[in-house]
Image 1 (cartoon, one colour):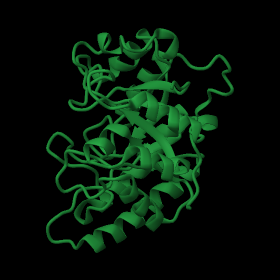
Image 2 (cartoon, one colour; image 1 turned 45 degrees about the vertical axis):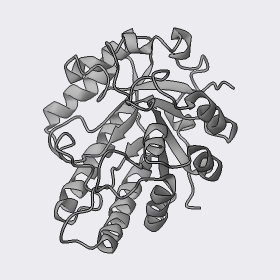
Image 3 (tube, rainbow, N blue to C red; image 1 turned 180 degrees about the horizontal axis):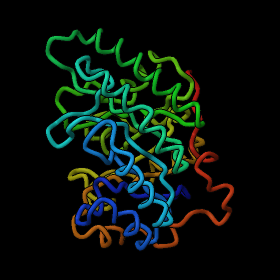
Length: 287
């Protein structure tokens, strides 16, 4: 079982051997036409100069930005988003316009809002109420440019509450905006013990973006045991036509880690109109 979905590269986990602003060009040299990033700055509201440099790096490389995370705090230190974190909610709200503004300049329509860990001193119900408010604010801002906000189950963070596709769907439904969709990272779902095949069957219509890595190890496809090709084919058969983000840790150099993927599978479709991100980014409803 094979699929025809298009792959793109997460430049925050691949090509880390290069300075961040050199990575889009390295992705292009490896034969890909599109990239995604976690939040690429140290602060929620970066300087105009830093934003301009990032935008120029993507444009000059000749790649399309198809996914961008909102500011998520200090990820190496264990932070996993500010959406439901009461003490840092204002930072997330300040970051919304910065993130959507970059998306507008680069034609990006998908924005990943990491939900945030559970924190001491705040009831889970209160965090979920705040999370719903902030997701709705982000979604309304993204809607101004035809964008979609993504909610992602994550593994490896003990206090992160969204572990399964159903957990993320519940958070999306609490927010109640039509342009919030599920980010289905097949690696995170599998590692968390979710039934990925059942999740695809139940929620394919709610999937707005897909990411992959193999497990165990979170390395490139073919290094582990996950049936990624079959699951991607199932998503495509269920109507998913968007991107597949390569969000894995390479076992060798980043360029060599793509050997599993023929170069002809790394390019955009010949029909440039059908390849436009606003055409292929899945639109999702609230139900």
